[in-house]
Length: 245
Length: 278
Image (cartoon, rainbow over all chains, first blue to last red; front, side):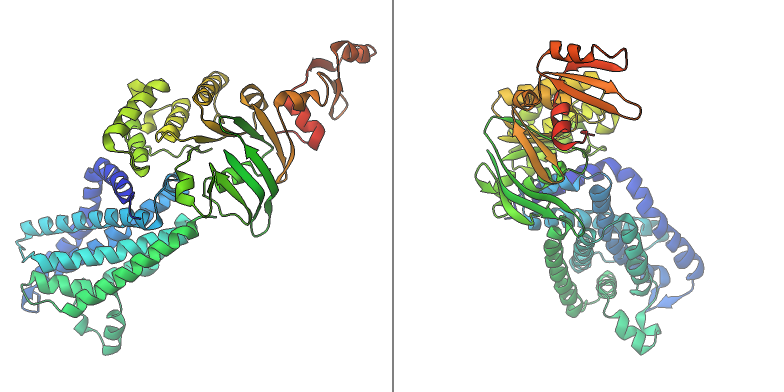
């Protein structure tokens, strides 16, 4: 049933390899600006949860990058579908919908983990070296699985590039700023906290930050991320047929 | 073999196919001819699983395209109308990805690529990025890609569209060569001479229906052997004759504004539908 996922992943990796140097520059720019502006300049003397603001910020930026870069696979699919028509090459291949989705989701996760790793490297010149243990990476893997799966589902359902841009503006950008990336959620009113706890990025940021600080992460965060990831992956498989006319 | 039974395709506001019945035999080169919007590409999209059937059924070598889609997809190669190669990948990488998608072992895929690149006369472009190829070269790579997994059926959707006459003829020679190796070819085109030169049989499609189906020779013979085009005030009028003498005799009273020529498939289509194949 899953035969063929490697071919889909292989194609994405060939393209990624060719574009990697340019992508790494793009992946580095925003986090670097956040680190300089918010972490270094504005938050120099700020302490949150007994850590400097830079130490607080980097796990949040890592969680955010894993979300945005995993979700970016949707734009790649979108261009392949509407502009280059390469999606038809997959549709006419003898591979199942599940295999196609798995290949694309893994490609999204690979991009997400590379972009996250880059932020950790960027943190070193700022003197930030946290605990990047197994739980830290598990939270990133689950978060990127959630958003890569959602990206594939969305890419199958939308009908144009403009729809994709709209979804990025309406969903991903607000989540990036409100999902616990830049500030602790307990600074917000209780009702806002309740709403923001519905977002997967909030749980990813909490799990990533707790692991990076060497604390015991909350198992509930991992459970929620795993459940959403499973549902999003199933949704992505179900939507592939919708892309046929 | 391709079998299509009572095929209907309806979109929200239009009926693209209105009951197509068709059998294309193994090893045959079959041309599907019609004006833009007649339903040619819709038929190919249905046969290749890209578009859902509204009513009817279609089989490729006995495999139902809707119910046994994975088995049906193993039967064919598709050369689409638009060039859908990965432009950031090399020719070799494009073909290798296709081989992987069709579950070919890496080593046999590489051997097949070398064979096919020699077959389409593009061995020297193996490691060139697709974006650096000419239009004609890209078309040939599309054909090579469709042949990667050695399919028994090849769908060619307007394979020479947008190419100049020399390159078009080169593509035709390649298509003939593929047929001689036993591949069943289903060709859509609006180039009349392409169908006339290549096809064993031709179907004329108009407004989602097949209006005629026969060999090019029989379709043309049905209207005569010679044609006389006469330029009228606001239109071109064509008359058909069984011999050149009859045509000349008819033209005897005319001083100019006419031309006598052999009948072609376009005439057969025009006489059946009243439309030009554009």
